[in-house]
Image 1 (tube, one colour):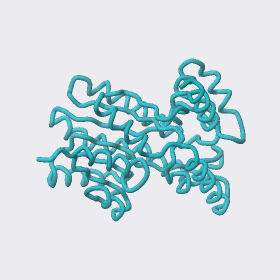
Image 2 (cartoon, rainbow, N blue to C red; image 1 turned 90 degrees about the vertical axis):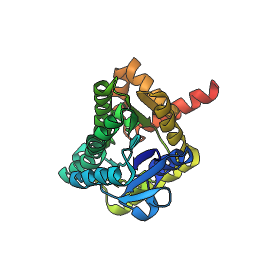
Image 3 (cartoon, rainbow, N blue to C red; image 1 turned 30 degrees about the vertical axis):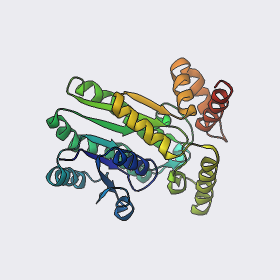
Image 4 (cartoon, rainbow, N blue to C red; image 1 turned 120 degrees about the vertical axis):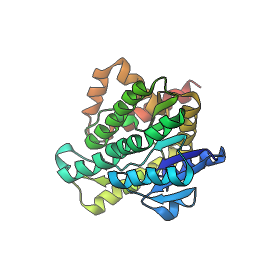
Length: 275
């Protein structure tokens, strides 16, 4: 029987690149997404909203029945919301928590037992450098990604010695479509679209593509790495968060440019000068 991998949010961006990378290594990739047509371009498609617990449970049952228990689970599906905390509505919070955090919970909860029954395998939860980079512009997004990181650390501790590894992958600024698709709280839709398009253009000019994250995910699986920042900025922010939390808190107060992007730019220049 073929070795199976499940990737959520596989129709585009990091999920799509990861599905292609795993497929190139001979795995049968089940590509879960709300866009079933595009997911089918890179693997076996399955339409599901990761925030829907009963639907995710049915998805896990379907995978077991049709393909067998997976060896790899990549919880990647996520959405973005930016803006001031006070511009976020309760509905914004519920939606982003349901997708970014509970979507990962659902994946681990319903597929985890299948990996444990196999006695080996790997779970990758895609968090973000925003998980350890406080900023006034991404309060909800950062909170959900911090939750994903802590969930991953806790689950890794619980599954130690079982043969099932657990990794958190934390991308920095990466050229994907999440910026255009994100909601920008407190601004009208036209301005939100403008901001998303600008961020997408900036990312397209100098940020690495999703393939960089996909390669990091594959390495995390192969080497059972607990935490993998991706991009110079993600590594720089991680180092600063460990060495000087006070400096990170000061950066978080800045207006204008997102502190996350400031760290990305500084780290990128530093690594270019020293390599």
